[in-house]
Length: 246
Image 1: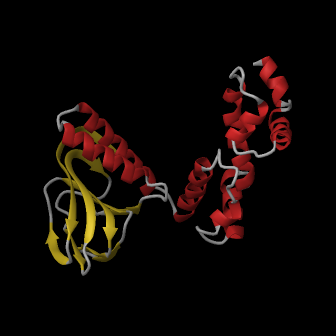
Image 2: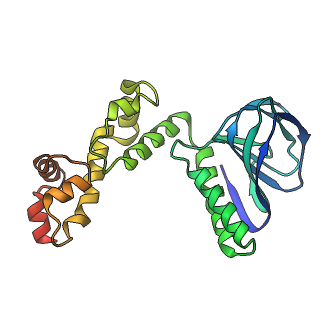
Image 3: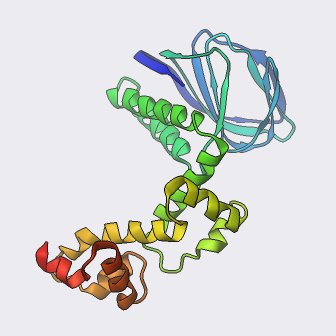
């Protein structure tokens, strides 16, 4: 999907707590991104309704009709701006990944805009936000699941209590996700996690006074022997030798 960003003008950044109601179809002459952060209901579009659920992100181009319907109410954050072009003129609907990067960027933009709406950092955060959304929009369902696993592994690099299969079970069938991940990445989720841990251990080994036991604990290994064996398998040398050479 191709898009271009020119000089943007941020028109509004705000958040809404809407009670149960219907917000009828309406349109703006500028772009609007809405991130739904709570509640439930339906997103009204000219071609039919979509589910309104926390984590849903809607990008509405100028003149795209949209609205909401909710019996219990919903929470949202919304950004209005101009100077953005993308192939197509229909609404894009994506879902924020489990680790919530879009929610984090929206919160950051909201706070920076409240502090000083003319601060150039607001433009920087919005550009990053748009770039992330467009990246997610280009993902297939399989891509999204692989990325969710990657972020889950990154979040648990230093967690010795992490249980891979139990965590995969929260995303779907562990066996199916194992196969999907290995096909996309080339290694199993467990091997990818070990690779991440070994990568993060290398700068720690350069810290004088930090024992191998301490390094192994910081990168999620309970047993220094297990860490040393995994490190040697990955790098071709034991961590003590790596430390001496680096």
